[in-house]
Amino acid sequence: MTILVTGGAGYIGSHMVHALLDAGERAVVLDNLSTGFDWAVPTGAILVAGDSGDQPLVARIIAEHRVDEIIHFAASIVVPDSVADPLGYYRNNTANSRSLIECAVKGGVKRFIFSSTAAVYGNPDRVPVGEDDPLKPMSPYGSSKLMTEMILRDASAAHGLAHVILRYFNVAGADPELRTGQSTKGATHIIKVAVETALGMRPKMQVFGTDYPTPDGTCIRDYIHVCDLVRAHSDALAYLRRGGSSSTLNCGYGRGFSVIEVIDTVKRVAGVDFRVERTERRAGDPAQIVAKSDRIRALLGWHPQFDDLATIVRHALAWERKLAVRRGEKTVPAAASG
Image (tube, rainbow, N blue to C red):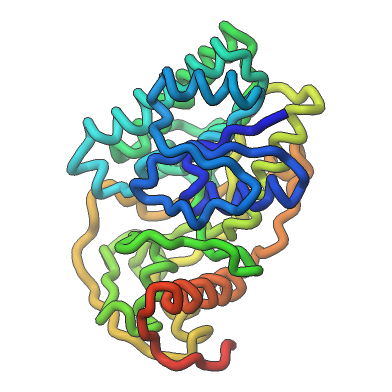
């Protein structure tokens, strides 16, 4: 039994591969290394450089490695970029996923886990938002993921491809053992940006929009530790192996923090102050989105281990320091965490 992990050299994907190998699974990684890193793939996993939309390559991997399960992470994920380059996002996120799913069906793959996003909800009518609430994406990124959800469901109905769709909320943190973490230069994740600023790697950070209908005027998000997200994938795989029916599930904690609250937490944990610049809203950003997470807990028996913003920030800080050493970059001196 071999699991194909697309995007397995990236942030979330590399955590997943570590978890699979820790559990004694066999994994092959397909990644074009545009935002991932070969060194992030652990020893013991096979790395193939290429695109998930390359059907001859994917078909060959499925046949040669006897792949019967796929966990699909590979995607472009930056909301403002998707607004500027919608066709690129529909190609990479939707068209490539359609090609991958077709290969899965033709190759006899039995189970498929897809990393979707809370962006499919847009600006929800209620918070927390549940899986059955209206889907109104505000960006091509959200739309590209929603289209893939539809393709996967239709393919499942026609061909019996058992699947779980996991709608991620805001993923952050790093492996507590510091084997991998968010390593992309110029990443836009707020905790990553705030941590880099706290360590003196950025001169300042920006807050996009301070006039939202929230208590402090900044966007509110549900932040989930990457290791808890990976555990959700492992639990989803176990669920499908037990014969569970195809399902769509939110991945979040059910509690939100504003941008200002996140920045204050990073300052407190890092023990340093840093410059924050308030500027205009970005296109495609909803005011508030928090997960209703009772379904994933009930169906998969999922129990998060790192449901604490300060812990998420501590792990992100520790990883960023290690990454800086790897790159030969200087950071501000370590401070006692609070």
